[in-house]
Amino acid sequence: MHAQTSKRELAKMVNEGVDLLKLNLTDEAIEKFNQVIKLDSTYADAYFEIANTFYITPMKKPDALPYLQKLLQVDPKYTAGYDLLGNIYDDIGEADKAIATYEKGMEVNPDYQRLYHNLAVCYYQLEKFADAENYALEAVRLQRDYTSSIRLYALATYKQQKLDRSLLGWCAFLMLENATGRSREANRYISEILSQGIGNTGVNAVTNKDLPTTDSLSLQLTRAFKIIAGTSKDKASEQFNACFGEYFGKLADSGNMPAFTRFITMSVKKDEDQAWLNEHQKELDSLTRWITATKITF
Image (cartoon, rainbow, N blue to C red):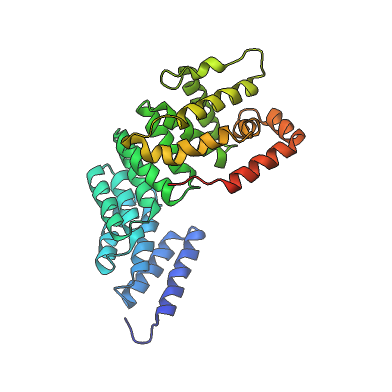
């Protein structure tokens, strides 16, 4: 590093490059990052920002590889570098290298949530759904409000016909994201799972055609949650039961199921559900208090 260039000045230059990127001045940003490297060939953030610039530039992802490889040479503990490198390997069809890179990143930083999520994505794309399930659940443990990991868990378990786990995964997802296109997808999966029944429990048998659709759904979900929570905790399902199973079993017994059902179906019955919630503010407040006081444990 040039004696006259301090770490603070280098950081300022990197930030200037990031600002140039925000203005879509890609070439100028890369030039700024390269200036930093010329001043200090061990300045890890500059390598990362160049690599990230190539990553977000169409058709330029492979150009990021040498910068990430150099980054991890100068700073082997730069966890985000492993994550980005794994993403690029995955995107260019080198899944084995992606998996190895994510795993190496986990050795460096076992608590970096994105590594677990992206490894789960990689396994899901390879149709290794059990591995995808396990890593998605670990990602949720590390960041419980990251809805993409919860959704991936629900998808991976559905692919394995673990309908109980998928149902609760979709419900956990909807508690955090209830009004998007992905929320409509979640509701479709819930309807399909309930129509099949949870194992041989006949959950769908609680449907009452004399009840409004949402009230019938509330009964179905209540019944399903209680059945799932009551299943034996064999070794393979211990972690699942300890987090999702126990949590939704408590919800089924809390008296908050009508408000919960209205809340999670907002994406498909917005006007109807919003009207109901407006008229039942006490029930909504009770559900909110319950969610605040009751946490999913891992």
